[in-house]
Amino acid sequence: MYPELFRIGSFPINTYGVFLAIAFLTAILITVKLAERDGLPRERIYDLSLWMLLASLIGSKILMLFTEPEYRENPLGLLSLDFLRSGGVFYGGLLGAVIAGYFLMKRYQLPWWKTADACAPGIAIGNFFGRQGCFAAGCCWGEPTSLPWGVKFTELGHDITGVPIDQHLHPTQLYESFAMLLVFVFLLWLHKRKRFDGQVILVYAFVYSVIRFAIEFVRDDPRGDILGLTTLTGLSTSQMISLIVGSIALILLITRNRKTRVLNYEDSRAPIRAGVTD
Image (cartoon, rainbow, N blue to C red; front, side, top):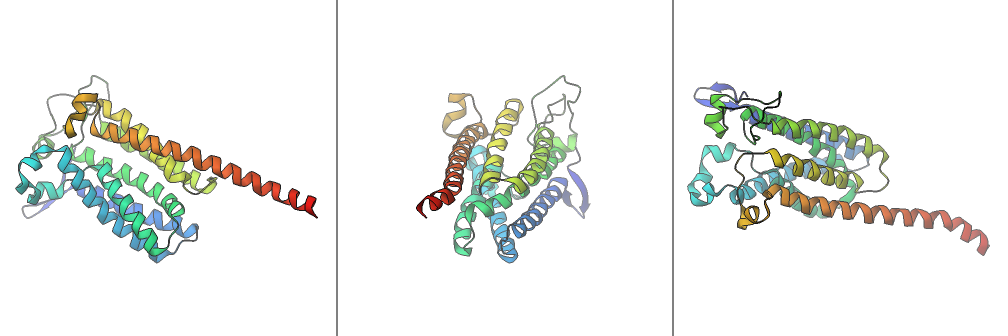
């Protein structure tokens, strides 16, 4: 709704960029705090977070090339200010961060699941701030609606993102933003009570996939048609990715929970067996 905060000369300071910076900074600080609580080295987590941040930016841009065909048709657009200022595609950023995190955790000798659990709440609060930025910019808009909370965007928003301004739209950005704020609070609660390492990040992945899959039904901004799969299935790219990510997260949650139960049972039986042997 307010895509620009102010200008320095002719250079605009976009609200989206400010919210994105807040999202990254908040996510890193929360991740470091939770990692310290788990006994992980503070300096390594800072290094890890910064490299994962860079990887997420690159990954979000790469997937953007596939979902927005105008950049493939006009490669010089990759050097434009609009491309550099755009946020990219969240799932691309998440995948980039996961890949970078996997190799860096091995290099830094950090435990994968425990470290990922410390990252999960930070990612969720990053979603909250990031989508507030989307709402301010007018991107990622929803379908027309007659509901009382439908929103109309400004002409400046239309000039920057192409959002329609002649009708009320679903505030899909706010749907996801406030949903992820609730998820963030829940993940903080879960982090203190988790039954096994990996539970927090896997719950995040599953819940986010469900939320994103549902919201996509009322999204109306152009998001590409990779390999014609959207035309074939009727699902957006993000919905197809959500199905894959959510399914994998659910399977891992079940298997790791089952493994934990077996280990706990064997540990509880060990003193009994020892007593019989004696």
